[in-house]
Length: 114
Length: 116
Image (tube, rainbow over all chains, first blue to last red):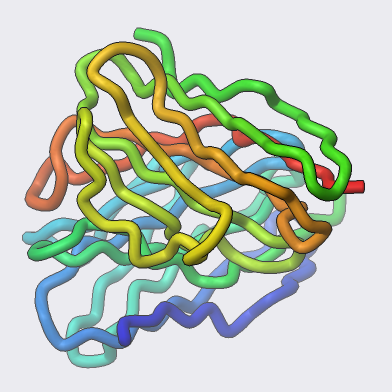
């Protein structure tokens, strides 16, 4: 069965530190890849997505992610975090054939200290 | 363009009662997905519907849960005879297409169900 792994469940950083959140998926076929963010008390918002083409994807709020097909990874990065980035981050995968449901990782809770 | 709407935002039920959660997709979206988020866990797919059709219900519990997306009106997720383990946040998402390059799901604010 397809699955998505986010290895860091809780991350604490100081403002201006660099961020990298890991995401790996298990599926041998073609996938679409997404990162969503959930700020406290709010619903999920799309940060960025990858369908095809340039494996380095830039999203909103200074986030980017790199798709490395050989490693089945889609890690999220930000060079300098802010206190307002405190949130939960979810990686998700959807298959490009058959059912199009999203498979989510368990999420990473990021806390940025001011 | 209004986003995905869900109501109620918070729902409290006693064990054995029915819970009815509503989702209005974004305008022009004909694909609706329901996900459940249990405490300290990620979102788990429940069901995927198009107008008047259930396409994939592989994530739905076999009993007490049902979903519909009628020709007119919102999608409904119905939980009969709720138990404490049903307490969770239920998110609805919609998309204009499924799969392919335009496959992006837009999420509603969720309904937080508490079963006493």
